[in-house]
Image 1 (cartoon, rainbow, N blue to C red):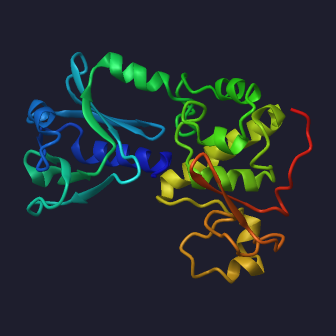
Image 2 (image 1 turned 90 degrees about the horizontal axis):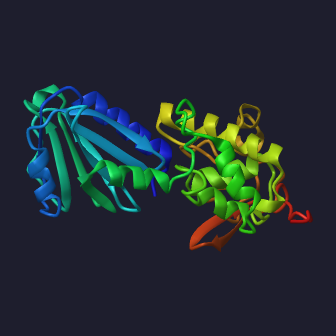
Length: 282
């Protein structure tokens, strides 16, 4: 599933391509056809993301029409400059500028959700989400709100980091990598985590996800580790991680074999050498 930086990049791309222009909307698949008819001809105001949710605003500031998109596991967007090809496959929403040469076309396929929502529905979606590390300038982003949930929980910290009501936008890669970077047992409970450790995690997520937003991929290796012999042996990998999807391989730092287990129906990766089981009291 795409992580938060992907949705924020989508928001930037949609805004750059379509904001300020009249747009044309269609739904070749048909599932979005009634909403596409409402949008057709409206000017896009802007697109924005919160966690893994995209909101596209059309019409006027006083009376906006908002589309909510959640990509889920299978959703993806492709962009075309100039005239697009004939629609193929399960194309849920085709958005283009009018004329198309101004910004091109965005084709959305396979999202979990794509629908027009009113202001109350937007508020309800946002109310279910925790603070977003990529919205640190937003007054509504308060990492202490996440800490309140974490510090009272008996759930594993690895699960809490993936809970979008605790932190919005963190997925399987960022949770595995940030826990490794701080040498934390992924199965320790939220109540066992210290406040200073939480603030270190949050600050690290803010930095890591900002890099992901900027470069378009997840990069988690610390600069001092990039030149290590074990990392150099993995130079063929596009963006090597410390533990994510490295089951059975030696840890890049200590050489211990990376392990994988299942937590809440998602794969969990960690290094038993660097992330030893905690004996703290909950």
